[in-house]
Image (cartoon, rainbow over all chains, first blue to last red):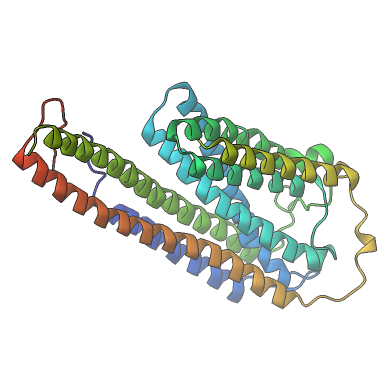
Amino acid sequence: MTETPSKLPLRLLTGLGLGTLLCIAALGWVFFVAPADENLGIVQKIFYFHVGSAFGMLLCLCAASASALIDLMAPNETIDAAGQACTEVGMIFALGVLTSGPLWARKSWGTWWTWEPRLTLTLLVLLIAIAVLVLRSMAAEAQTGRRIGNALAVLAAPVAYLIHIAVQKWGGTHPQVIQGGGIQSSDMRIAFWGSVVALLTLGFSLVALRLRGILLEQHMVRLRLDLSALELQRARNGE
Amino acid sequence: MRLKALTTSLVTFATGFILTAGLAWADGATVAQDLSRYKEESVPGGKLMLIAYMVLWGLVGAYAIRTALRQSRTERDLAALQDRLDHFAGSATPAGAPKAEK
């Protein structure tokens, strides 16, 4: 029997608390210190957390992809659980990106959506994450769902790479603010990097929280099996 | 895995994928788009920004709360299961069966 996952979520609570505090501080800086963009106005403030969410999405889905590949080659329950947690948090970030992006685009491009490379690929990576989670949750035979889900999750990293290079490679309308040096003032730069660090800290803590939950669920399954074995043995002994 | 469920999810995913790729291809996704056709009306940026932040934090908050609640329920179930297992293991430990640990 394996050990129960640590009952000391203090580090986890610290991480979540730190992530939340950083996000509140970043939000304060974004709204009360960073100036509004000269051309776009107040709607440009979506940018700070939109890009932070995109970073979180790419990191989480690349980590999920790496975990899936490792688990396919050498099955390991903890690595698999970490991959599953990363996929879930990556999906939340992707939903955030694909909601905040169109709202920003409505003002700056005049349309909610356009089928340009980066947007299309982001939608595809979200579809992959959803498909992985749905396949895993629908698996009556856990190992089969795990293998198929992992095989699909491996695709997320190449798509994430394509998202990263999409604008340089194929052009499109998506702005290249960071590479293009488009952040105008130092207050904007602090707001941007502060938001990125805050969201990544919160995202990492959410992955850790979910990982702990998955490990607890796996432990419960093993205990149920143990209990069934004992009950069966007892019934055979006629007790 | 239930074959019907697997087939349904794979077909749904494939349809979504092909539809997305098809729409993107039809709209000339690999070239820069002409956005001048859209820029005709004035849009309230403040409202859009507010909605974006509400949705983003709503998603993150709902996920965190759901995960924490699910985890505390699992912990409760786990404690009850461990008690039951200890009770069984205390009265009879069958050969080959794993021993319960605290």
